[in-house]
Image (cartoon, rainbow, N blue to C red; front, top):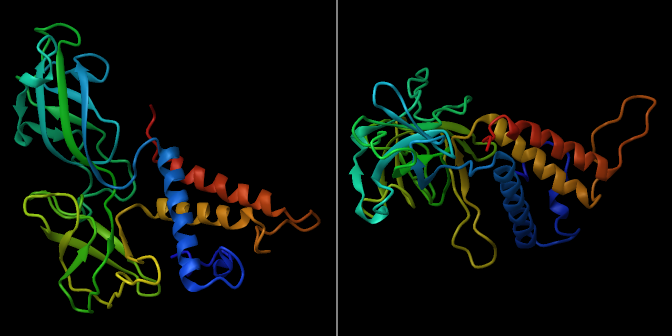
Length: 308
């Protein structure tokens, strides 16, 4: 994606002019890892979909009780796509004697988002709290009288297509199925970024490589057949694997990735392609232009950031 971006960086000169293709790819992958870390740090959470277990004491500030008996557990990552299960135990007895909270007794708060044909929201942060049915958390043990653990899948599904797929195919193999299809809740819609063969697909089912898993590699069934063929470059011995990105992240976060990429591309002053100056003013230095790109990336990601 960086190689095909139209933001003015001469990526073929990385890590130095005359570098071999494997060296260029390795250098760009380093930049991608750096900008991914930056985006997660600015957002105060992992943006891509992950399965996590969070444990808190309650009821108190993080876990609150409503008058109808439902408990609200404010999670640290979002959007919440699926609540797998939970566990609750009296704080006095420790966490080893917990009572299972089945997924049927859990639901994401504000899950009634406008229907877009996709499990994951494309603009708004989406659900940020887990609702626990009455009967599991109450005031009988006082403030912070329970230890509550919730396992959820949250974030925007992101994966790489790692096996060649032909036009018309009804499934694709990816390196991470997390969040693409959850139980019978529905499938996520994402974009295949394979310039110039970009297309939008919606998952209609999943078959994990390891039976019973909801994360890790597997095969996604598609609601509609592929329009284009997609051929990743993986398994070679001469250069790093290049999987084809499939992402359900909002376009604003994808654009932020380009901004951060340009920031790293301009730090060394290897190109004259910087933000243009206004007439009658001095052209910005490479360092200033790099900082401008970084600031634009921060502004984009901050819209989705978790407030501690």
